[in-house]
Structure formats: C-alpha cells, structure tokens
Image (tube, rainbow, N blue to C red):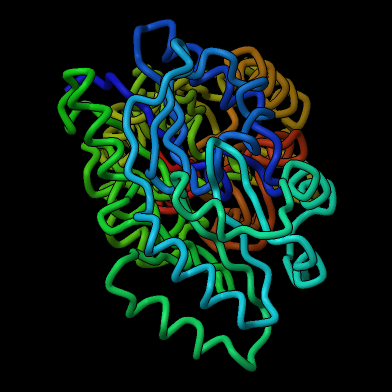
Length: 421
C-alpha cells in the first residue's frame, strides 16, 4: 500500500549523535515525501519546548507526538488533537515518592519541562553532548513547590538516576505502580505516563482522525518506547543501532541514525527510488568476458528489484576487443598471457568506470571476483595457472581509493546489510 504518514522517533533515529542535527539527506527525503502528499510526524519522549530546533530543520513538519504519546499537536493549526495526561492523585503520589531520593526528576506540562528547585545538583551522569545538555537545562522551568502542579495536566514524569544505591528500589516501585506505565529507553532513565499512554496509541488516534490505515504508515524507532509504534505501522522500521528487542519486533531494519537510515528507507519505500549500483556487465549476462562468454549470476541479476543497476566492463571501456587474450596482474601491471603489457588500456577503462560511477552517484559496486580489472582482495597471481594471491584489480583499486564500497558476487548478503535496502 502507498505510504500516507511517516512518523519518526528523534534521539537515536531521526537525529545524529549530537541529539540535535537532522542530516541534509534525511531532510531532503522527508521533504520529497511531503511534496508527494505524505504527512510527516515526529514521535518523541520529549515535550514541545525541546524540539523547536527539529521544527526549524523540518519546517514542513505536520504533527508532533510528544511526551511518549501523552499528546499530539497539529503544527498547522497549533492545536492539541489528542491527549491522555496523568491523573492528579497519581502525579502527586509520584512527586512525593521521588522527592525522598537524591535524584533529578522533571515533569512535562503545557509543552514545557518543569522541576523542583534545588534538584539541579542531581542532574549528573548523562552521557550526552554538552551543547544538548545546556540547551535542555535552559529550557527547564524550576519551582519552589511542584506539588501545586500535580492537578494541572501532567503529560509525563522523567527520572534521571544514574547511581546504584537506590536504583532497584526506585525502579521496582515505579514499574509495579498500578497508576502509571513506565519505559526505560536507556539505563537510569525512567519515563512515566498515564496508563495506556504509548506512541502507538497516539499514532493510532492520529490515523483515525486522518482516515489513514495502519498499513499506510511508516514509522522509525530505536528504543523500547518505540516498539508499539513499530508494531502498529505497516512499515514499522528499527534502526541498525536500535535495541535488540526493538529490531525483533519491527517489520524492517534500516541503517543506523549516523548512516541516514531514515532517508535510505524513505527513498526506497516511500519515494520508490532505487540506489544506483555499479555492476560488472558479465555478471548480468553480457558476453563481454575475455573468451566471448559471460559470468551470468542470478543472485546479482535479482538485485534489479532493489537497485538501479549500471553495467560496466572496464576492459571494454579501455578499448580491448571481444574475445581477447586473458590478462593477469604481474608486479602491479596488467599483462596478457602472450606477454603484452595492457596496463594503459586497463587504466583507461578504470578511469572511465570511475567517471560513470561519479556521474550516476553510485556509492556501491558488485564486481567480478578475481578479475585483473574488478577483483577485490584476491586476484589471479600472474602465472595463468588458476592460482590466487592477495590484491585488487586495477579498476577495483581505483574505485576503492575513490571511496566506493566494493562487493564481489559472493557477497550479496553483505551488500544488502550494508545498504539497508
């Protein structure tokens, strides 16, 4: 089914390691999707006040599912279209309980985070970039008495406790509390919401409002608070850097947040774009082999379903005829079996192949193994006896030095893991 809504978690998913930046490729992919009429949402444990930098980078964003699904904001109308807050007595009970411990906790209300004044000293041990921490602290409102806010619509309560003395005691109480749901995206961070609050429920509510079926939803996440959302969405996709349980529950796994995993998946499944792949023509069945035959490989040909393949034959590009005398690499030079030095022709073909790769934007290639042009890592040793030695063919060597990632025909599974398509 066509994709009508894309929902992305933020930290560890849409954002880079700095917890701030959305890559240019990801912005472009989401923008192209939005231009096709696909709605774009973020689904985060954060509240609204700490995602404005994301809104600035993605100005076409339609919806924000925030506080782990406690509320949904329609950015086009600036209205809350869904909410499920903590009951006042439950919020008060949690405030009272956590106040007994040397721990920093905060609560989200009206799109902002709030905390008890004096607890700043416990805000330590977080393995996050300093720039992010400073911005986060600056956006927090501190109060002399937080109990007065318990009945004013608490979206979520966050505990940051990275000590060991009371951790099990605190965790056991919170996770057994009948009035709240808890998640722990990372060790030491416990997030508390009203019963039934989940990104998936908020996403389902949004879909019901928009008339979108779950099969038409693409969702991305990396932590346990994303699992329900990934199970709900027809294109539920975990990042390569996600927790194992998250990957087990997801229908798909893409590349990591540092490898533009969201963009790669959106380009392929929402936009229908196939990444370019350079392929040795002989592997596709073209009769360009030295003896006039080919090295047709059905597994390579099947990649047409996932990639836009660009066939190359460096030896033909270099002006060598079909058929031709076989060549091997001897002391770094391409020499035919009858002793002719063909290094100039092999180099010309290699440069032509690199030009094509750069023109079409290919970052990956599947090349014929052991070939004096295309072999990677292992090639024939120059004795024309079928013996092998370590090394690269002339084209493969140039492509590798130019930044392309090369695979042999026996490494298709590695290619698919590397590219995430």
